[in-house]
Amino acid sequence: MIQLRLAGVIRESIVDGPGIRFVVFAQGCPHQCAGCHNPQSWPFGGGFTAQPEQIIGEMLKNPLIKGLTISGGEPFCQSAAMAQLAHAAQEKGFDVITYTGFTFEELLVQAKSDPTVWELLSHTDILIDGPFIKALKSYDLQFKGSANQRIIDVKPSLEKRKAMLIHL
Image (cartoon, rainbow, N blue to C red):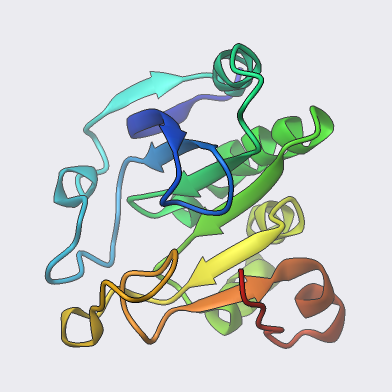
């Protein structure tokens, strides 16, 4: 039985993607960006465990939820578990947004040796990539923390092996 290690959950968010979203925060992060919004998510041994089915069950309790946002910490450090969660969410009709401190290009390289990275990417509709850079922080950026981060349409990006940006 696969377990997610989470730093937290927000049952209704309007700042982590379009519409009302259910947000899970992965526990554990190698990036540890200066000025991080979630430094409590950095230790890999912290947080709590949950099963993907539990999260989906909670999402289904609220008919206003449009989608699942997977944030962090770093979701790709738990790519197998997060891929299972993302797949289950999509099967129930939810869209999936995944935040990562890695770039899309770095994830493509990782996916060559770790197929679960590819699996999580393939079950993500929109990827918001790149580390948070405090000097590039702006409150004018929708769904991003710093100007270097990109909003990527994952399906065509995987097909072309090139980041295809979208505006939400």
